[in-house]
Image (cartoon, rainbow, N blue to C red; front, side, top):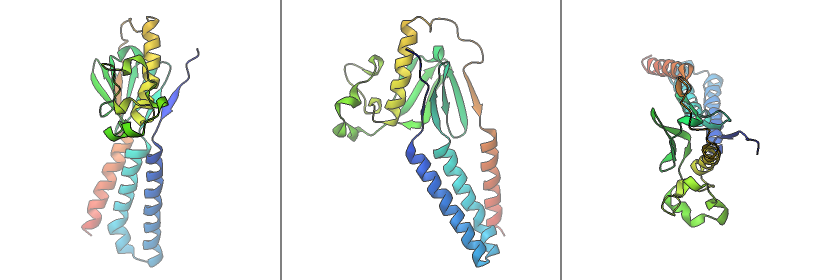
Length: 201
């Protein structure tokens, strides 16, 4: 069967980001229409900072399941995890990949609460073999949860590669890496400084 890439991004994050952006733009327009330049300079940067933070925390994060690696994009950095580097996949608090460099948690795939078990259907528990621990399934493993949907996709391909003996080779140097989001960090830092300076005006 041909591998199908998959992307996981919570829809709630996009809705929240758009909502916060609209609120920020509306407030900024309100200052301009009212001619309140002092208020715009004092509070406008805070509105932009709030919108940028929401974008970084809830729009940017994603889990990309690709043929050669799993890419986990968090607010301030992105992890590139090749398949042979994955030692274990967990969903206790969020989708977590255990690697030779430690665990990599996915901001975009949090686990569901314990009470979700009361709303599950039969389809939610049709998970891969490695998701079954001691004959039970965690709430974070269920297919209706954000962590479970991503983990199931990763586990099934990882199991297929394992069974085909494609995970036994040495890990190529540099393939397991973390890339910081320098532009995002600088943008948030600049907006924070301008916000604090605005209050001192």
